[in-house]
Length: 93
Image (cartoon, rainbow, N blue to C red; front, top):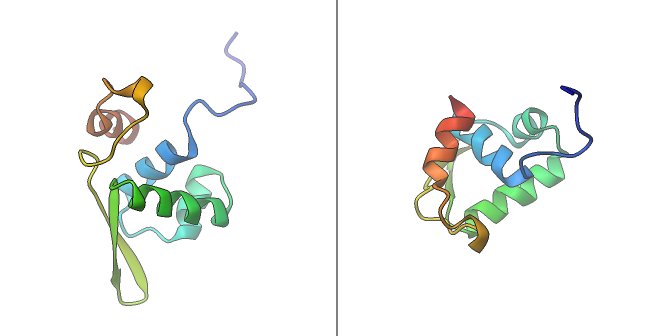
């Protein structure tokens, strides 16, 4: 009991959304490191989240700034009662 499991409890999408909520100006490299995923996966997940309406990105100089819209995104039907804003509060403390 209390051992580490070999599979992720949260999806990469949830982890990336939480990482961006904590640091909206994070680089893809920083997001990937925080979520323990590759940069390519982080980029794909950010694009998925943007297409789903959970965030928008603005170019500020040479970097991106992310603006979250967790109330706009649609969750999986099995999670319809889960509030994404409430989940982000739990994950970002």
